[in-house]
Amino acid sequence: MKGKITREYIVESADRLFYQRGYEHTSFSDIADFVQISKGNFYYHFKSKDEILAAVIQLRLENTRNMLAKWEADGERPEDRIMSFIDMLIANLADIKMYGCPVGTLCTELAKLNHASRAEANELLFLFRSWLSRQFVSLGLEAKADELAMHLLARSQGVATLAQAFQDEGYEGFIKHEVEQMHAWLSCTASAAQSAQEAGAGR
Amino acid sequence: MKGKITREYIVESADRLFYQRGYEHTSFSDIADFVQISKGNFYYHFKSKDEILAAVIQLRLENTRNMLAKWEADGERPEDRIMSFIDMLIANLADIKMYGCPVGTLCTELAKLNHASRAEANELLFLFRSWLSRQFVSLGLEAKADELAMHLLARSQGVATLAQAFQDEGYEGFIKHEVEQMHAWLSCTASAAQSAQEAGAGR
DNA sequence: GACGGATTAGGACGATCGTGCTAAAATTCA
DNA sequence: TGAATTTTAGCACGATCGTCCTAATCCGTC
Image 1 (cartoon, each protein chain N blue to C red):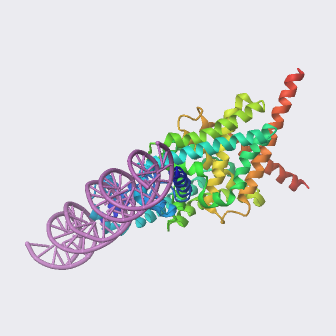
Image 2: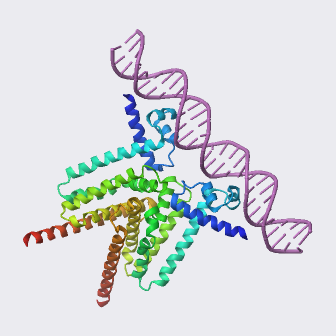
Image 3: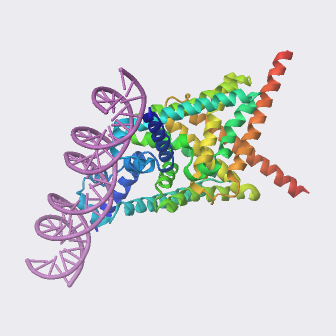
Protein backbone atom coordinates (compact mmCIF):
# COMPACT_ATOMS: atom_id res chain seq x y z
CA MET A 1 0.00 0.00 0.00
CA LYS A 2 2.76 2.36 0.94
CA GLY A 3 4.65 1.12 -2.08
CA LYS A 4 2.07 2.73 -4.30
CA ILE A 5 2.95 6.14 -2.92
CA THR A 6 6.66 5.48 -3.28
CA ARG A 7 6.15 4.31 -6.82
CA GLU A 8 4.19 7.40 -7.74
CA TYR A 9 6.78 9.59 -6.11
CA ILE A 10 9.52 7.88 -8.08
CA VAL A 11 7.66 8.38 -11.34
CA GLU A 12 6.96 12.03 -10.64
CA SER A 13 10.57 12.66 -9.69
CA ALA A 14 11.89 10.81 -12.71
CA ASP A 15 9.48 12.80 -14.84
CA ARG A 16 10.93 16.04 -13.54
CA LEU A 17 14.53 14.88 -13.82
CA PHE A 18 14.10 13.48 -17.32
CA TYR A 19 12.64 16.80 -18.33
CA GLN A 20 15.39 18.88 -16.79
CA ARG A 21 18.44 16.77 -17.60
CA GLY A 22 17.27 14.52 -20.38
CA TYR A 23 16.58 10.80 -20.18
CA GLU A 24 20.02 9.42 -20.93
CA HIS A 25 21.82 11.98 -18.82
CA THR A 26 19.71 11.06 -15.79
CA SER A 27 21.14 8.05 -14.05
CA PHE A 28 19.53 5.51 -11.80
CA SER A 29 21.48 6.98 -8.92
CA ASP A 30 20.34 10.49 -9.73
CA ILE A 31 16.72 9.48 -9.29
CA ALA A 32 17.51 7.41 -6.21
CA ASP A 33 19.33 10.34 -4.63
CA PHE A 34 16.52 12.71 -5.41
CA VAL A 35 13.83 10.41 -4.05
CA GLN A 36 16.04 9.54 -1.07
CA ILE A 37 15.67 5.86 -1.65
CA SER A 38 18.22 3.11 -1.85
CA LYS A 39 19.15 2.01 -5.31
CA GLY A 40 18.14 -1.55 -4.57
CA ASN A 41 14.69 -0.41 -3.62
CA PHE A 42 14.30 0.73 -7.17
CA TYR A 43 14.54 -2.73 -8.50
CA TYR A 44 11.50 -3.68 -6.51
CA HIS A 45 9.39 -1.05 -8.24
CA PHE A 46 11.02 -0.98 -11.66
CA LYS A 47 13.04 -3.74 -13.24
CA SER A 48 14.89 -1.40 -15.57
CA LYS A 49 15.43 2.21 -16.48
CA ASP A 50 13.37 1.70 -19.59
CA GLU A 51 10.50 0.64 -17.38
CA ILE A 52 10.67 3.93 -15.48
CA LEU A 53 10.63 5.82 -18.73
CA ALA A 54 7.59 3.88 -19.85
CA ALA A 55 5.83 4.75 -16.60
CA VAL A 56 6.80 8.40 -16.96
CA ILE A 57 5.37 8.53 -20.44
CA GLN A 58 2.17 6.86 -19.31
CA LEU A 59 1.85 9.45 -16.56
CA ARG A 60 2.37 12.25 -19.04
CA LEU A 61 -0.17 10.75 -21.39
CA GLU A 62 -2.72 10.60 -18.61
CA ASN A 63 -2.00 14.15 -17.46
CA THR A 64 -2.17 15.41 -21.00
CA ARG A 65 -5.50 13.72 -21.65
CA ASN A 66 -6.89 15.28 -18.51
CA MET A 67 -5.56 18.70 -19.45
CA LEU A 68 -7.04 18.51 -22.93
CA ALA A 69 -10.36 17.34 -21.52
CA LYS A 70 -10.37 20.27 -19.14
CA TRP A 71 -9.62 22.73 -21.91
CA GLU A 72 -12.43 21.23 -23.89
CA ALA A 73 -14.81 21.53 -20.95
CA ASP A 74 -13.75 25.07 -20.02
CA GLY A 75 -13.56 26.67 -23.45
CA GLU A 76 -16.92 27.56 -24.90
CA ARG A 77 -15.84 28.28 -28.45
CA PRO A 78 -13.25 26.18 -30.31
CA GLU A 79 -11.10 29.31 -30.62
CA ASP A 80 -10.95 29.61 -26.85
CA ARG A 81 -9.84 26.01 -26.51
CA ILE A 82 -7.08 26.45 -29.04
CA MET A 83 -6.05 29.59 -27.20
CA SER A 84 -5.55 27.44 -24.12
CA PHE A 85 -3.06 25.41 -26.08
CA ILE A 86 -1.19 28.46 -27.29
CA ASP A 87 -1.14 30.02 -23.85
CA MET A 88 0.67 26.98 -22.50
CA LEU A 89 3.80 28.72 -23.74
CA ILE A 90 3.09 31.58 -21.38
CA ALA A 91 1.95 29.46 -18.46
CA ASN A 92 5.16 27.42 -18.52
CA LEU A 93 7.39 30.22 -19.66
CA ALA A 94 10.07 29.83 -17.01
CA ASP A 95 10.41 26.08 -17.47
CA ILE A 96 10.41 26.33 -21.24
CA LYS A 97 13.20 28.87 -21.20
CA MET A 98 15.30 26.53 -19.09
CA TYR A 99 14.38 23.10 -20.37
CA GLY A 100 12.42 23.54 -23.59
CA CYS A 101 9.17 21.76 -24.36
CA PRO A 102 8.81 18.56 -22.30
CA VAL A 103 7.19 16.73 -25.18
CA GLY A 104 9.39 17.96 -28.01
CA THR A 105 12.71 17.47 -26.27
CA LEU A 106 11.77 13.97 -25.16
CA CYS A 107 10.66 12.93 -28.63
CA THR A 108 13.83 14.36 -30.13
CA GLU A 109 16.05 12.54 -27.66
CA LEU A 110 14.32 9.20 -27.95
CA ALA A 111 14.46 9.46 -31.72
CA LYS A 112 18.24 9.82 -31.63
CA LEU A 113 18.55 6.96 -29.17
CA ASN A 114 16.31 4.76 -31.28
CA HIS A 115 14.64 3.97 -28.01
CA ALA A 116 11.91 1.38 -27.72
CA SER A 117 9.54 3.86 -26.09
CA ARG A 118 9.85 6.30 -28.92
CA ALA A 119 6.43 5.48 -30.30
CA GLU A 120 4.78 6.07 -26.93
CA ALA A 121 6.48 9.44 -26.61
CA ASN A 122 5.29 10.38 -30.07
CA GLU A 123 1.81 9.47 -28.94
CA LEU A 124 2.07 12.51 -26.67
CA LEU A 125 2.58 14.75 -29.65
CA PHE A 126 -0.15 12.94 -31.48
CA LEU A 127 -2.52 13.65 -28.61
CA PHE A 128 -2.08 17.37 -29.09
CA ARG A 129 -2.23 17.04 -32.84
CA SER A 130 -5.50 15.15 -32.97
CA TRP A 131 -7.04 17.33 -30.26
CA LEU A 132 -6.14 20.49 -32.15
CA SER A 133 -7.38 18.90 -35.33
CA ARG A 134 -10.73 18.24 -33.72
CA GLN A 135 -10.98 21.86 -32.63
CA PHE A 136 -10.35 23.06 -36.15
CA VAL A 137 -13.02 20.69 -37.38
CA SER A 138 -15.37 22.31 -34.88
CA LEU A 139 -14.48 25.60 -36.47
CA GLY A 140 -15.77 24.22 -39.74
CA LEU A 141 -12.37 23.64 -41.27
CA GLU A 142 -12.61 19.90 -41.83
CA ALA A 143 -10.55 19.92 -44.99
CA LYS A 144 -7.58 21.70 -43.49
CA ALA A 145 -7.94 20.67 -39.87
CA ASP A 146 -4.93 18.39 -39.69
CA GLU A 147 -2.74 20.82 -41.60
CA LEU A 148 -3.69 23.64 -39.28
CA ALA A 149 -3.10 21.46 -36.24
CA MET A 150 0.37 20.52 -37.46
CA HIS A 151 1.09 24.12 -38.30
CA LEU A 152 0.25 25.35 -34.83
CA LEU A 153 2.07 22.47 -33.19
CA ALA A 154 5.16 23.23 -35.25
CA ARG A 155 5.12 26.89 -34.38
CA SER A 156 4.88 26.24 -30.67
CA GLN A 157 7.65 23.68 -30.90
CA GLY A 158 9.85 26.15 -32.70
CA VAL A 159 9.18 28.89 -30.18
CA ALA A 160 10.08 26.53 -27.34
CA THR A 161 13.30 25.48 -29.05
CA LEU A 162 14.48 29.03 -29.60
CA ALA A 163 13.37 30.17 -26.17
CA GLN A 164 15.49 27.49 -24.57
CA ALA A 165 18.50 28.12 -26.77
CA PHE A 166 18.57 31.89 -26.52
CA GLN A 167 17.07 32.15 -23.05
CA ASP A 168 17.71 35.76 -22.21
CA GLU A 169 19.74 36.47 -25.29
CA GLY A 170 16.55 36.44 -27.27
CA TYR A 171 15.03 39.86 -27.68
CA GLU A 172 12.87 40.75 -24.72
CA GLY A 173 9.43 39.24 -24.92
CA PHE A 174 10.11 36.88 -27.79
CA ILE A 175 7.73 34.23 -26.52
CA LYS A 176 4.98 36.70 -25.72
CA HIS A 177 5.33 38.28 -29.11
CA GLU A 178 5.08 34.96 -30.91
CA VAL A 179 2.09 33.99 -28.79
CA GLU A 180 0.36 37.22 -29.77
CA GLN A 181 1.02 36.44 -33.40
CA MET A 182 -0.46 32.99 -32.99
CA HIS A 183 -3.50 34.55 -31.38
CA ALA A 184 -3.85 36.88 -34.35
CA TRP A 185 -3.38 34.02 -36.77
CA LEU A 186 -6.03 32.00 -34.97
CA SER A 187 -8.55 34.86 -34.94
CA CYS A 188 -7.95 35.41 -38.61
CA THR A 189 -8.34 31.73 -39.42
CA ALA A 190 -11.44 31.36 -37.28
CA SER A 191 -13.25 34.41 -38.63
CA ALA A 192 -12.42 33.43 -42.21
CA ALA A 193 -13.94 30.03 -41.53
CA GLN A 194 -17.03 31.59 -40.05
CA SER A 195 -17.68 33.96 -42.90
CA ALA A 196 -17.12 31.15 -45.37
CA GLN A 197 -19.67 29.09 -43.50
CA GLU A 198 -22.18 31.92 -43.48
CA ALA A 199 -21.68 32.48 -47.17
CA GLY A 200 -22.26 28.78 -47.73
CA ALA A 201 -25.43 28.86 -45.64
CA GLY A 202 -26.75 31.94 -47.42
CA ARG A 203 -26.39 30.34 -50.79
CA MET B 1 51.12 16.23 -42.35
CA LYS B 2 49.10 13.10 -42.73
CA GLY B 3 47.76 13.76 -39.27
CA LYS B 4 45.95 16.77 -40.61
CA ILE B 5 43.91 14.56 -42.90
CA THR B 6 43.21 12.08 -40.10
CA ARG B 7 42.15 14.90 -37.82
CA GLU B 8 39.79 16.32 -40.38
CA TYR B 9 38.37 12.90 -41.07
CA ILE B 10 37.78 12.38 -37.37
CA VAL B 11 35.99 15.70 -37.04
CA GLU B 12 33.80 15.06 -40.07
CA SER B 13 32.89 11.60 -38.83
CA ALA B 14 32.20 12.84 -35.32
CA ASP B 15 30.08 15.58 -36.84
CA ARG B 16 27.98 13.02 -38.65
CA LEU B 17 27.72 10.68 -35.67
CA PHE B 18 26.84 13.43 -33.22
CA TYR B 19 24.11 14.49 -35.59
CA GLN B 20 22.70 11.03 -36.05
CA ARG B 21 23.01 9.62 -32.55
CA GLY B 22 23.41 12.70 -30.38
CA TYR B 23 26.55 13.84 -28.60
CA GLU B 24 26.23 11.94 -25.34
CA HIS B 25 25.05 8.77 -26.97
CA THR B 26 28.08 8.71 -29.25
CA SER B 27 31.04 7.15 -27.47
CA PHE B 28 34.72 7.54 -28.07
CA SER B 29 34.77 3.97 -29.33
CA ASP B 30 31.91 4.63 -31.73
CA ILE B 31 33.91 7.30 -33.48
CA ALA B 32 37.08 5.23 -33.36
CA ASP B 33 35.28 2.28 -34.91
CA PHE B 34 33.78 4.42 -37.61
CA VAL B 35 37.05 6.08 -38.52
CA GLN B 36 38.83 2.74 -38.24
CA ILE B 37 41.41 4.10 -35.88
CA SER B 38 42.68 2.79 -32.58
CA LYS B 39 41.23 4.43 -29.53
CA GLY B 40 44.63 5.47 -28.29
CA ASN B 41 45.32 7.30 -31.50
CA PHE B 42 42.52 9.60 -30.58
CA TYR B 43 44.33 10.99 -27.64
CA TYR B 44 47.02 12.30 -29.93
CA HIS B 45 44.56 14.40 -31.90
CA PHE B 46 42.07 15.25 -29.16
CA LYS B 47 42.70 15.24 -25.45
CA SER B 48 39.05 14.76 -24.57
CA LYS B 49 35.61 14.17 -25.98
CA ASP B 50 34.71 17.75 -25.24
CA GLU B 51 37.59 18.81 -27.44
CA ILE B 52 36.16 16.87 -30.36
CA LEU B 53 32.81 18.51 -29.82
CA ALA B 54 34.46 21.91 -29.84
CA ALA B 55 36.19 21.05 -33.11
CA VAL B 56 32.93 19.80 -34.60
CA ILE B 57 31.16 23.01 -33.67
CA GLN B 58 33.97 25.09 -35.12
CA LEU B 59 33.68 23.12 -38.34
CA ARG B 60 29.96 23.68 -38.46
CA LEU B 61 30.41 27.37 -37.79
CA GLU B 62 32.84 27.63 -40.68
CA ASN B 63 30.62 25.66 -43.03
CA THR B 64 27.63 27.71 -42.04
CA ARG B 65 29.44 30.98 -42.61
CA ASN B 66 30.46 29.79 -46.04
CA MET B 67 26.95 28.69 -46.86
CA LEU B 68 25.45 31.98 -45.78
CA ALA B 69 28.06 33.88 -47.76
CA LYS B 70 27.21 31.82 -50.81
CA TRP B 71 23.51 32.46 -50.44
CA GLU B 72 24.25 36.13 -50.13
CA ALA B 73 26.40 36.07 -53.25
CA ASP B 74 23.96 34.00 -55.30
CA GLY B 75 20.67 35.63 -54.38
CA GLU B 76 20.05 38.91 -56.12
CA ARG B 77 17.15 40.12 -54.04
CA PRO B 78 16.95 39.71 -50.24
CA GLU B 79 13.80 37.63 -50.74
CA ASP B 80 15.75 35.15 -52.83
CA ARG B 81 18.39 34.81 -50.14
CA ILE B 82 15.82 34.18 -47.45
CA MET B 83 14.23 31.63 -49.76
CA SER B 84 17.53 29.77 -49.75
CA PHE B 85 17.25 29.49 -46.01
CA ILE B 86 13.70 28.20 -46.15
CA ASP B 87 14.53 25.74 -48.90
CA MET B 88 17.14 24.13 -46.68
CA LEU B 89 14.25 22.15 -45.25
CA ILE B 90 13.64 20.66 -48.68
CA ALA B 91 17.27 20.16 -49.59
CA ASN B 92 17.93 18.17 -46.42
CA LEU B 93 14.51 16.60 -46.23
CA ALA B 94 15.64 13.01 -45.80
CA ASP B 95 18.14 13.79 -43.05
CA ILE B 96 15.74 16.06 -41.21
CA LYS B 97 13.07 13.39 -41.18
CA MET B 98 15.51 10.97 -39.62
CA TYR B 99 17.64 13.15 -37.36
CA GLY B 100 15.96 16.54 -37.10
CA CYS B 101 17.74 19.83 -37.50
CA PRO B 102 21.50 19.49 -36.84
CA VAL B 103 21.63 22.87 -35.13
CA GLY B 104 18.44 22.70 -33.12
CA THR B 105 18.93 19.19 -31.78
CA LEU B 106 22.51 19.92 -30.76
CA CYS B 107 21.56 23.11 -28.93
CA THR B 108 18.74 21.32 -27.17
CA GLU B 109 20.97 18.48 -26.06
CA LEU B 110 23.82 20.66 -24.85
CA ALA B 111 21.36 22.82 -22.94
CA LYS B 112 20.13 19.81 -21.00
CA LEU B 113 23.67 18.63 -20.37
CA ASN B 114 24.72 22.07 -19.19
CA HIS B 115 27.69 21.50 -21.44
CA ALA B 116 30.59 23.92 -21.60
CA SER B 117 30.28 24.23 -25.38
CA ARG B 118 26.68 25.25 -25.20
CA ALA B 119 27.42 28.87 -25.97
CA GLU B 120 29.39 27.94 -29.08
CA ALA B 121 26.55 25.77 -30.32
CA ASN B 122 24.12 28.62 -29.76
CA GLU B 123 26.42 30.75 -31.85
CA LEU B 124 25.37 28.55 -34.76
CA LEU B 125 21.77 29.54 -34.27
CA PHE B 126 22.81 33.11 -33.81
CA LEU B 127 24.60 33.02 -37.14
CA PHE B 128 21.36 32.22 -38.92
CA ARG B 129 19.45 34.69 -36.83
CA SER B 130 21.70 37.65 -37.51
CA TRP B 131 22.05 36.72 -41.17
CA LEU B 132 18.29 36.56 -41.60
CA SER B 133 17.97 39.78 -39.67
CA ARG B 134 20.32 41.49 -42.08
CA GLN B 135 18.28 40.28 -45.04
CA PHE B 136 15.13 41.72 -43.55
CA VAL B 137 16.94 44.99 -43.01
CA SER B 138 17.80 44.92 -46.70
CA LEU B 139 14.11 44.54 -47.36
CA GLY B 140 13.61 47.82 -45.55
CA LEU B 141 12.23 46.28 -42.38
CA GLU B 142 14.82 47.56 -39.94
CA ALA B 143 12.38 47.93 -37.06
CA LYS B 144 11.10 44.37 -37.20
CA ALA B 145 14.11 42.64 -38.70
CA ASP B 146 15.14 40.69 -35.61
CA GLU B 147 11.57 39.71 -34.82
CA LEU B 148 11.05 38.44 -38.33
CA ALA B 149 14.32 36.56 -38.25
CA MET B 150 13.40 34.85 -35.00
CA HIS B 151 9.95 34.09 -36.35
CA LEU B 152 11.29 32.36 -39.42
CA LEU B 153 13.94 30.54 -37.43
CA ALA B 154 11.32 29.31 -35.00
CA ARG B 155 9.05 28.06 -37.75
CA SER B 156 11.80 26.09 -39.44
CA GLN B 157 12.85 24.63 -36.12
CA GLY B 158 9.30 23.57 -35.41
CA VAL B 159 8.89 21.98 -38.80
CA ALA B 160 12.10 20.03 -38.32
CA THR B 161 11.03 18.83 -34.88
CA LEU B 162 7.67 17.55 -36.07
CA ALA B 163 9.12 16.06 -39.24
CA GLN B 164 11.53 14.00 -37.19
CA ALA B 165 8.94 12.93 -34.63
CA PHE B 166 6.20 11.96 -37.05
CA GLN B 167 8.43 10.90 -39.91
CA ASP B 168 5.99 9.17 -42.20
CA GLU B 169 3.08 9.38 -39.80
CA GLY B 170 2.82 13.04 -40.64
CA TYR B 171 0.40 13.78 -43.41
CA GLU B 172 2.01 13.41 -46.78
CA GLY B 173 4.01 16.45 -47.78
CA PHE B 174 3.92 18.18 -44.41
CA ILE B 175 7.34 19.76 -44.85
CA LYS B 176 6.67 20.86 -48.41
CA HIS B 177 3.38 22.36 -47.39
CA GLU B 178 4.93 24.33 -44.55
CA VAL B 179 7.71 25.49 -46.85
CA GLU B 180 5.16 26.76 -49.32
CA GLN B 181 3.44 28.66 -46.55
CA MET B 182 6.71 30.22 -45.52
CA HIS B 183 7.29 31.24 -49.11
CA ALA B 184 3.88 32.87 -49.17
CA TRP B 185 4.50 34.59 -45.85
CA LEU B 186 7.82 35.90 -47.13
CA SER B 187 6.34 37.22 -50.36
CA CYS B 188 3.61 38.92 -48.44
CA THR B 189 6.04 40.45 -45.97
CA ALA B 190 8.43 41.57 -48.70
CA SER B 191 5.79 43.17 -50.91
CA ALA B 192 4.23 44.92 -47.94
CA ALA B 193 7.63 46.34 -47.10
CA GLN B 194 8.16 47.47 -50.67
CA SER B 195 4.83 49.26 -50.99
CA ALA B 196 5.40 50.91 -47.63
CA GLN B 197 8.76 52.10 -48.88
CA GLU B 198 7.30 53.42 -52.10
CA ALA B 199 4.59 55.23 -50.20
CA GLY B 200 7.25 56.74 -47.99
CA ALA B 201 9.31 57.79 -51.01
CA GLY B 202 6.32 59.30 -52.76
CA ARG B 203 5.46 61.43 -49.76
C1' DG C 1 2.18 -12.04 19.53
C1' DA C 2 3.27 -14.58 15.51
C1' DC C 3 2.97 -15.19 10.84
C1' DG C 4 3.52 -13.83 5.80
C1' DG C 5 3.62 -10.81 2.18
C1' DA C 6 5.04 -6.17 0.98
C1' DT C 7 8.68 -3.06 1.14
C1' DT C 8 13.30 -1.43 1.92
C1' DA C 9 18.54 -1.21 2.46
C1' DG C 10 23.06 -2.01 0.95
C1' DG C 11 26.27 -3.74 -1.73
C1' DA C 12 28.29 -6.66 -5.63
C1' DC C 13 28.42 -7.78 -10.59
C1' DG C 14 30.03 -7.11 -15.32
C1' DA C 15 30.11 -3.80 -18.93
C1' DT C 16 31.25 0.41 -20.80
C1' DC C 17 32.59 4.99 -20.37
C1' DG C 18 36.35 8.77 -20.94
C1' DT C 19 41.06 9.14 -20.13
C1' DG C 20 45.92 8.50 -20.38
C1' DC C 21 50.30 6.02 -20.81
C1' DT C 22 54.19 3.74 -23.51
C1' DA C 23 56.40 1.70 -27.25
C1' DA C 24 56.41 0.90 -32.11
C1' DA C 25 55.79 2.49 -36.78
C1' DA C 26 55.63 5.93 -40.31
C1' DT C 27 57.01 10.13 -42.14
C1' DT C 28 59.84 14.15 -42.75
C1' DC C 29 63.97 16.53 -43.42
C1' DA C 30 68.99 17.17 -43.46
C1' DT D 1 70.89 7.11 -45.38
C1' DG D 2 70.11 8.48 -40.69
C1' DA D 3 68.23 11.36 -37.04
C1' DA D 4 64.21 13.84 -35.50
C1' DT D 5 59.57 14.28 -35.35
C1' DT D 6 54.97 13.04 -36.20
C1' DT D 7 51.65 9.63 -36.08
C1' DT D 8 49.83 5.26 -34.68
C1' DA D 9 48.58 0.91 -31.99
C1' DG D 10 47.40 -1.46 -27.95
C1' DC D 11 46.47 -1.71 -23.38
C1' DA D 12 45.28 -0.36 -18.59
C1' DC D 13 43.30 2.68 -15.21
C1' DG D 14 39.50 4.53 -12.27
C1' DA D 15 34.82 5.94 -12.43
C1' DT D 16 30.20 5.27 -13.40
C1' DC D 17 26.59 3.00 -15.58
C1' DG D 18 22.39 -0.33 -15.35
C1' DT D 19 21.37 -4.53 -13.27
C1' DC D 20 20.45 -7.70 -9.75
C1' DC D 21 20.78 -10.48 -5.46
C1' DT D 22 20.10 -11.21 -0.46
C1' DA D 23 19.06 -10.06 4.05
C1' DA D 24 16.66 -7.00 7.06
C1' DT D 25 12.51 -4.41 8.19
C1' DC D 26 7.82 -2.91 8.03
C1' DC D 27 2.91 -3.78 8.60
C1' DG D 28 -1.70 -5.69 8.30
C1' DT D 29 -4.12 -10.09 9.69
C1' DC D 30 -5.27 -14.01 12.22
